[in-house]
Length: 115
Length: 108
Image (tube, rainbow over all chains, first blue to last red; front, side):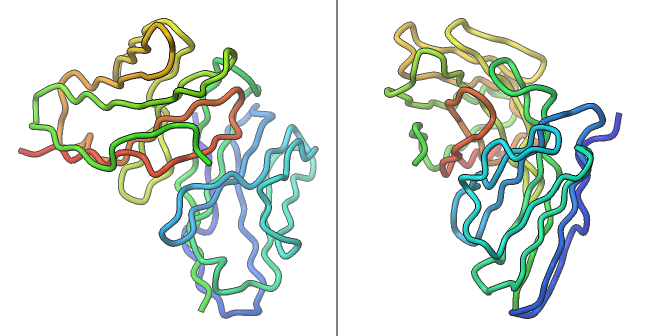
């Protein structure tokens, strides 16, 4: 069974440019999450999809970040325009259901460097 | 802010048991205790979770105190590949709040 896959693994862009990160969850997982770790900080929750609906986007830092999950399968996270403080590792995770007794499966992350 | 406190680092000799403590004195009745670890720059990896009973799986054991205010993750026979940052998280649902974790170094 394939795990959570993220693309690209690394991205280097200049300040002001746009970057789109993609996440393919485990097949059949309705719940998809985005987390990120910026330099020197802890891993932070960004948002949670249930199928194609945003269930909780309380962690999104500002309106330069746009997450979508059309069709309830893969998800994209767009940063436009990127700023220096957006540099970090962006993790995607998925789970079959939300609530207790549920494991979260993480991808390997996308390392984003904004220069 | 994370609802857990963990020591920032620990060492363990290869082949010995690693006991990683976690305090979560404000845990709510419906919140589970989860343990994840992150090896190098990989994504966090699930280890184990529990509500109030002790749990064991192929990776580790989780001991939760009766008052649920603290827990201990036990890796029974640590190997060099267990060197990682270990995160203790209390949550209902998977919108986790990660703390800084414990950096475990398994020494040869």
